[in-house]
Image (cartoon, rainbow, N blue to C red; front, side, top):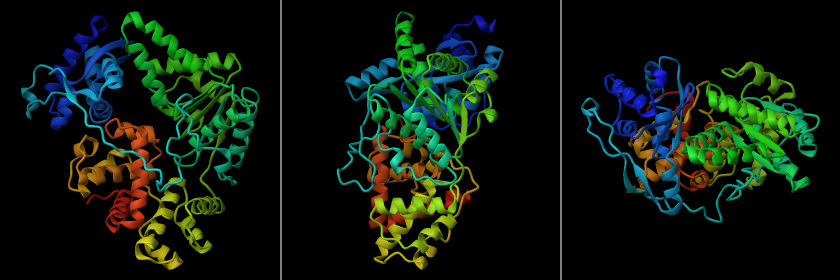
Length: 493
């Protein structure tokens, strides 16, 4: 019976079946396939172990469908999986810059019949140190090491309006009296509307009032990854790892969980989250959740969990009104010392209606054009700059962005997410990171993970650098403008 197979046997059968399929894989993807180990099975979830963040990204995206289907075939039931980095590799990384990478494999996948073990190779670390005079008005180190809060996200720099005033008021009241009136608090709304800002503002305000509080901000991906690492250790240390995991998430006064919709479909994660939720709730601790959709529209979560999400207070953040969009632009312009007339602010607010990040991107674009052409900002200049700028009906993903950027700079997808530090590759990579920040709802941490496991500070530096270059370098401005337009229209080059 499939249920009696051990993890190694499951992978051996899965690997052989994958080789017999007509998979259209690049050399890098084949190498990633050879880097996989199945290290644990928990019910319908498999724990896969790989040697690097870049490999994990490929396994979770490009190989996801084939792996899920084949694992289900081997096990005789629907299976899911999560991916962890080899704990030994993580330990080595803490002591040295060397990390294992997949061994090169033959070009023809059909010739590969035995998994090639990873070999050690030095990792080239990019010296991307953020300069003290960086262009953006974001502190260099915004994520607290203990709480994981973004220290720059506060209530005093969250611009209120009719579409978010209720959510802000409830969030502020929650920060003042955690665990009382609104528990759990469930904030929902579309991407780029300020949910993450409010979650972090709650934590920061609560600590300002009572510094003794224990606060933890996380998102569903981070929660899952930490759980997998705790479960994936050997039996002798697993108990201690789970005790530490539970202490981290159940020993807090306020737990803030972002993107909770992505917990769906991961049975072990759902169970761990359910138990964490219950224990905190029974202790009267504050829980705040954020999602793209209201609780009743969450898919793939058990009714018992959705019921608990709904028993507190669900509150929505709607797309900002015209007046709020103007107010946000005015605040952003003031922070960046941009002299901009009201008629231009109104024009931008008319062009961009549903996403604050895109709104701010339009302002950056106009400011850059004025700087490059040595002109003052006028309505005519803004109209010319934004003539192709409109709300997008196309879903923009990091994969789209990397693909478009690679094609624009005549590089490959692997070049962008790889370790090369050559000037043209580094520039393209930074542009792709900037666009990922501007055009998606991903956090700095998530973007860094997508780009080969880079640190969030590297992403922050890339965003600052490209934003500054747009003000001074016509080539950078043109690249960002053309790529943004193509991505919004969903057209290739």
